[in-house]
Image (cartoon, rainbow, N blue to C red; front, top):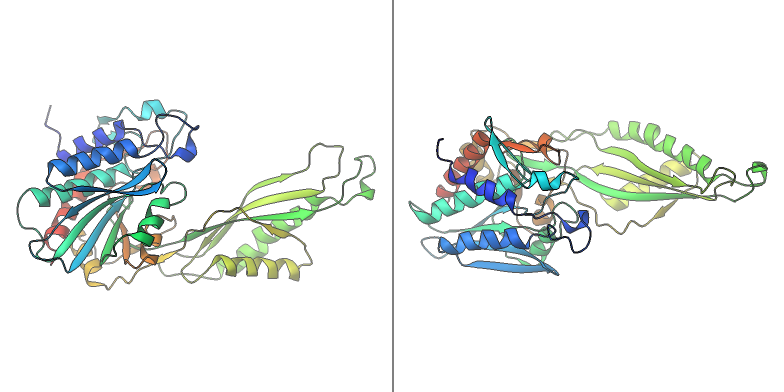
Amino acid sequence: MAARSLPVQRLLDLIAIPSVNPAFLPAGDPRAGEAQVAAFVADLGKKAGLAPEFQAVAPGRRNVLLHLSPAAPARHRVLLAPHLDTVGLPALDTLLHPRVQGGRLYGRGACDTKGCVAAMLSAVLAVAAKGPRPAETEILFLGLVDEENGQLGSRHYAAHGERGDLAIVGEPTRLEVITAHKGDVWLQLKTSGRSAHGATPQLGRNAVHAMARVVDALETDYRAELNRRSHPLLGSPTINVGAIAGGTQPNIVPNECVISIDRRTLPGESEAGVRREITRLLRAKGLKATFDNLRLSPCHPLETDPGLPLVRQLCRAAGRTRTRGVHYFCDAAPLAEGGTPSVVFGPGDIAQAHTSDEWISTASLERGTAILEKFLRGLP
């Protein structure tokens, strides 16, 4: 059997360490949280002579940082920022036993996004071990917690960490350089009615019926309005009514109904603007509904100038002539809002993320590592 490359072996080791986002497991489950995988990263960095640093984000959850200093005093900083957490599935125990088969490496987080952790970490450690390192650019490996739920890690770093000249956020982009992604706003709308006996529904006011009209307006009129907008890399914004709840039993006229909405936003759009649009639409159609608060912070869209010198340099290292956009959101937007221009890049295909047989091509993993090392060695 041929010897495994360092990125492949590191990914196998990373997958075997559970780091499921605590939001997806019962309290106290030993597979929850990023602490063990953060310790693994810190240990590798320490062995390579890079003093690890931890940034407390929430109880038991810390970002892990590895600093690679330049040959001279630092004047610039580049961040390599993958996330450490994964989602979970009923077959999680099986997914925590990775395997390589037919040029694919299978396991939870293989592409989303422990593949990026392995590639980025391997590139940084290779530069630290031998050969030229940047003259004036500090390289910071930043392993982030909680991307799969609330982006607590990237939001915390953006508020409290040092800014960089560029952040490369690790996500499976098929080694494309991504300079734009959509944002996401979750909203709830509630209609109110009046309860009555199901035998005399004319004495009540049916909140579910009222909501049905609201849903129809959102899925037809509002969707048509959104389809008339377009972004050159992202296409049109979208809306999806993903959940509905109303009433208690068939023989009671329901007095309340609630829907949950997923609204994907383009650069320049905001939650306040989305609320105003929906309010205006419903008012124009004579419909009444009020907003409930989901108490979730929206993820804002990303739009980074593809002409920035470091972005162009990454494109050259990756053999790309232009950048692209993606429909999903990630840690890039919070880091960009904190003052660090951000792009998204990594091995693997987002189509494999969160699946029951998640995998990454070993060739993509190794190619991604080589691209990142080439980029890092070419920094000023």
